[in-house]
Image 1: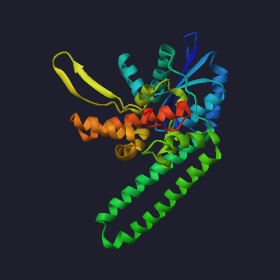
Image 2 (image 1 turned 90 degrees about the vertical axis):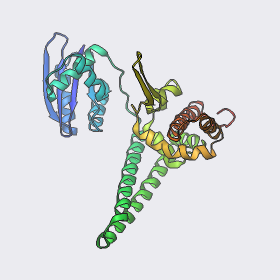
Image 3 (image 1 turned 120 degrees about the horizontal axis):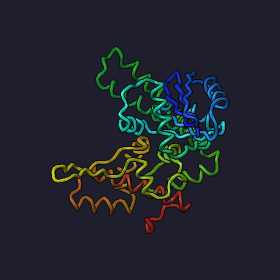
Image 4 (image 1 turned 90 degrees about the horizontal axis):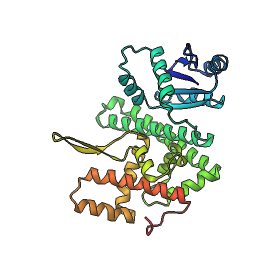
Length: 316
């Protein structure tokens, strides 16, 4: 088996291949379509089958190269950077350069055999891009609105004009997301199922569909863990008695998208109204209740998508 590690930067890729004969090959190329094609040709010349490739997730810069090697027929794993850091510490790693990072990823692929990554369908990737653009626009609008509150008179017209432009862009992207979903029957059906849950609107449903591949999860608990909405217990011996908290390891965009729907759900989602009332009666803090409601929403989303049936308050 040839284990390949790819350390991804914004403009460059560092590649190390650990060959079956114990030798090591190393390469660098650009993180561009031309560089990805060069990488695929290099793998065809130097990597003996079977080939496993590890790519460290790096703020989105890894997506194009992971897709390129996947489309070339190679098994590729997209790895959480925290996992690689922990693995390096377990190996008493001392040096840190791009080639040594790539070698560490290759060694991790050789010894640990992580799950193979499967890209989302093209229509889902396009929806994801639109949803992330919407998130960026909303964040920019919040920043400008905050500036307007304290702005000097001389700059207020500029900020107001920017807000008007951002509002138009936000409306356009929301419309584009809606039209995109309507164009694909499967996405349209899934959106309608998610929107049948009281508290979840069209924008949240679109974000969920762009960030979530329901087929990856065998249970709602797995999906909640992926979203980072499971408690983290800190107990050890007689001295460590830490307060519980959310793990927050996983899909941060999904957590962010579900916060305001949870605030709405505690008022209009029948099962979650009762659930929140029980937690309140037990003396739970408001943010603990909201986090628990977010987790319940994840379970309900999983339920409607897996069953193909609209939300039923009795079943919920």
